[in-house]
Length: 178
Image (cartoon, rainbow, N blue to C red; front, side):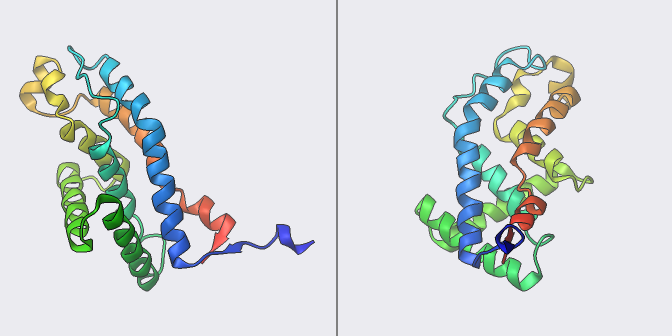
């Protein structure tokens, strides 16, 4: 009777596993569609011809953006524990040391923050990161290309997509406790 009212308890390790597996699953299953959408976006005068399997930059943007939001959803010591486990798992996936993967994610987080200034909106920053990491400026009309900024119409559409790649901690905590 009370089973429907209780939340499943997870360890920090289980949270890190769910987090990494769900993000990679969504990137692996969604990037081809996103790349195709970008290739056909009317904001570009020429198709960027992004390879539908070239999701490495996208995965690092998604992971970095989501790691940036961990601290806001956990107590600080718990965020540190979960983050450390995430880095350990990423190091295994990428066959790198934990320090190397920390530095890569730190660079991506820094990049997102820098191109997103003064905004603090992570979705907007992730959208801009996709624009710059996939060199999309080269395919815009001359006005935006000269300014070296994304067409705002493209960014708005990209924001709608990137919103699907932010971890929904509110829904997660309704189902689980840590």
